[in-house]
Each structure stands twice: as C-alpha cells, then as structure tokens.
Image 1 (spheres, helix red, strand yellow):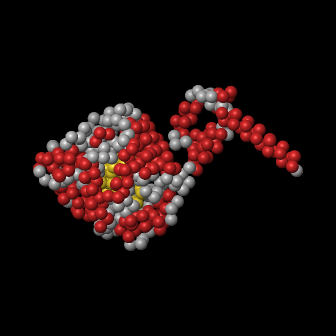
Image 2 (cartoon, helix red, strand yellow; image 1 turned 120 degrees about the vertical axis):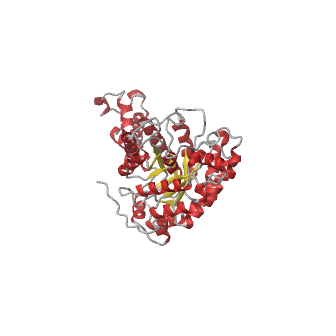
Image 3 (cartoon, helix red, strand yellow; image 1 turned 135 degrees about the vertical axis):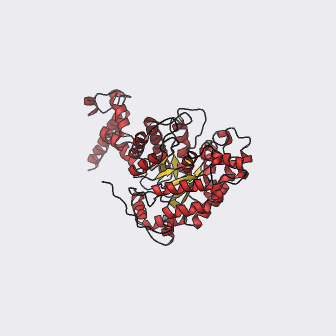
Length: 452
C-alpha cells in the first residue's frame, strides 16, 4: 500500500528550498536520499544551492517524493493529455498508469481540449509521481482569442492549478518583446505552443510579456504551494537549421535572470531546453545553460538529432537525449513515434517511455553513477547462463522481451532452451563460450594437479 506523506509545511513560503536554506532536512529530502542512495545532508545542500529540485506541491497528498538534478539519476518525463479532437478522462488516466508502471519519473498533463480541469484532477489523484502542467493551455480555453488573455487570467489559472496539487508548471516567462525580431529568418519560427501564444499577445498589444512583468506574483503563488517552475524554452529550435541561434540564446539569458530571481524568493526552478539540435552542438548547449543558469537543473525535449524520420522520432530524439544526459541534463522529456504527427495513444506512450528509459540509463552509466551498471551486469550473467526468466525480470520492458522471445519458441522449449531463435543450438555463441570456459577450467585443473 502506498504511503501518504504528511505535509506539515505551512506559511507563505513552504518550498523545499526555503527549508533547505534554513538547514532543515524535510521528510521529502530524507525520502529522496534513500531513493538516490545519497546522504540526506547532500540532498539538502543541493536543494539549497538550486542544483536539485524536489517537485512536491503541499496539496499532492499521494506523492512519492523524487528529485531532479545533475548529481542524481537522470530522470524522464512522459507527456499525456487530450486534444480538441481526441481522448477522455479514462484514457488519460490509463496513459498515466502505464507511464508510472513503465518507470516515468514525472508526467505532464498537456491537455488542450475539453474537461481540462476534470482530467487534471483525476491525474493528480491517481499519480504517485510529480505532475506538471502548462497553465496557459487552460487560460486560452477561457477566451476567444490569444489577444484576450490578461495577466490576471494567467495568474488565476496558475493559482487554481497550484491549489489542485500540480507539482511543477511550464511557464513561458522568458520570451520578451525584444526577442521577436530575432526569429526572422528561422525555418520553422516559434514551435513552442505556449511561446507562440505569448508572442501573438505581445505583437497584438505591443507590450511586454505579462508573465515577465508579473513574475513576482508568480513567485508568490509558487512559494505558497511549493510549485516548482519549469522555465519554458519558448524559442527552442524546431529544426536543425534553427539550432543554437540568436533567438534561442537571447531567451536563455533571460531564463538565467529569472532563475536567480526565483532563488531570491526560495522558489525551486528548472530550465527547459532545446528540441532539435545536431549531435555536435548538444554538449555546448548543455554547458552554456549550466553557465548562464548557475547549474539549475536542465530539462530537455529530446533533442532530435535529425529531422527526416517522422514516425520514428522517439529514436531520433533518444539519441540526442542520451548525449544530453551524458553532458549533464537532469531530466529528459520523452518524444513518442507520433511526434509532429498526432496525439499519442497507449502504444506510442509505451515506446516513448522505453526509448527514454534507455537514454537516461545510458547517461547514468556514462556519468559513472553509483550502481548504474549493476542491473546490466546481472542481466548479462542471466543471458550467459540462459536464465530466461531472470533476463525478462531485469528488462526495462519484461512483457515485450518475453513476447518477442516466445513468439518463435514454444513455451515448453523456452523453459530449458540454451539458445534463442536467432542462432539456434548450433550457432549459439554463448553455448560455445561455455564450452570454451569448461575447457579452460579443465586445463587449469590439470595444471594444478601436476604441480600438487
């Protein structure tokens, strides 16, 4: 039975950063330390420094606390949510449960259709992992046009979702009026939905971004409920041709400023990163963000390393995600095969999560995190000894692994077979290697007998 964590945090500022800076190790920090095999004091110091966040809204009562930071395991996020033309509450809760079962560390509800409020409430109620949202999506449903948005309406939606228990929110605070001319000449313009809506509002009103102008009020809300801010990368590149351009980096500089302003109020922050980046530019992007944003956790979408594989962008992006995680990205936002094509269904969610679990795990191994390779070594031993059940148990997707194995070998054969259907008994290298090992062992045994 899932343990419900009691929240005793009360006051106008109840953030994990607030307590960490006062030298207090909260029960959430204790729990994170156990999960990550870190010392509680180290977790506290990283949260106080801003290099680690623990998204834990005081109203999310069934949450199992986790952390996002460069000195913890690389995390993944799964996006779910309905659209104006597809999906319902039951369908989104099913996606949530699948995401949690397959190991997604957080889940974002990106609903843009009907029943947004009810869907979010159902997702939070059923989720033991942190839930993220993009409040402007609900605000835009309450007006006829983006131009009709107001600062008050945006702030009302942020506080409403905070009250519901949302743990972190993507807020497009960093796209400024003066950044918009820098987009001229881009191949794909502004690909962020929230960013494009803010740009549309600024162009119409010839005024500055209301979330930037009212950032202090945003911080008041986040401090009150301990909502972590995920600073939206509104001007992220939507294709390789637009990667690492002046618009992207101008906004990044603003995100660095907003990060420091949030820390002055003890509000937890992570920074969102680019979506399409050639492989040779990924490490530079990560290092630049760390420098500009004082090592606040970096949360990247992919990035996709090529633009020519619609239907397979869970692969093109997982390649970039693994490289980003190796360079220091703290969390990877999954991409499904449906990216750019349609709303993901359950199978798309499954493929996206597994691709990103692979990427995050590969990054942890490359960064030599404690115990990261243990499971790999255990599975390799099971493979060598033809312990099929143990291989499946240790797999990221046990059901799919056994399904693929069993479809070519009958169940009665599978139980004792010392081979798979790729090589068969005659060409199985593992079986031959065991014979070589037995031969070597016999030679050693004979040598010992001669010298005895």
